[in-house]
Image 1: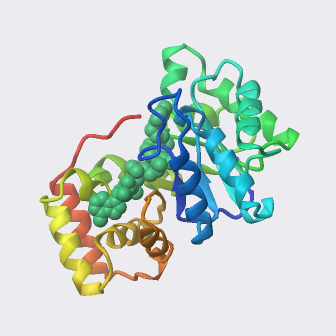
Image 2: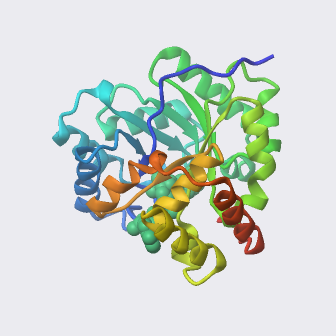
Length: 280
Ligand SMILES: NC(=O)C1=CN([C@@H]2O[C@H](COP(=O)(O)OP(=O)(O)OC[C@H]3O[C@@H](n4cnc5c(N)ncnc54)[C@H](O)[C@@H]3O)[C@@H](O)[C@H]2O)C=CC1
Ligand SMILES: O=CCc1c[nH]c2ccccc12
């Protein structure tokens, strides 16, 4: 039986550079990434969520160099998706761009490229286990893996995933409930991205209207209500913002203790307005 993978404490919320800060124009140096990451760390974030696919690891690396914070005070995650044929080389490239000698957490970004290239997921997982053993990563995990994908790597794995990073907010709860239960049963930490999607994509919907009314009840922002709801489900948020005030507020999400009736009402509102997964 696989014992839950031990590894370094993972600080949350994580600050992500993969959506609002995603590098669409690979030729342009993104000074906004450098500034946003520096503001995030200077305002209290210690976990930065990166990826090869975001195209901005060099900018993150410059921010980390400018910050000059002791390495052990930060938790840096990156992910591999483009270069899955040679994950060791992909890690070397990410570490060089980030200016680091190790990652705290290294993830398989998605099962999709493995299926597109007809490469077994277990081969990707084996590559991560090898890196774990060689010290360039301190913990390993997956993202966008569903139960069947987790079961597939479990067959040959010697180390279980430390985390599974998935889309998580009330409007995908229906899709994710069984995956949540599976990950909890295997002691796989669940990181949730796009926690605030209802506010952005469905601002007049039932979830957003309820969340906004609860924001008044608890005297916090609507965003914080959704981060607190994720927390109540045992899911750790990966979020982002360029606004310093929001950065400070997001860091306090664990202090918002929602009443069970309100948690249930948000869950029910999400189930009534279920959206398709973003399907990364
Ligand atoms: N593993 C994966 O496949 C994926 C990982 N991620 C990670 O998660 C991070 C966060 O993803 P997001 O979807 O951006 O997270 P999110 O749902 O937390 O949204 C953050 C965005 O919401 C905006 N926002 C904050 N409060 C708001 C409000 N009250 N009303 C309207 N908008 C508000 C912010 O300006 C920010 O741009 C990414 O940067 C990336 O690191 C994201 C998507 C996929
Ligand atoms: O992770 C954020 C969204 C994203 C951008 N590029 C890729 C590639 C594979 C999975 C997800 C993503």
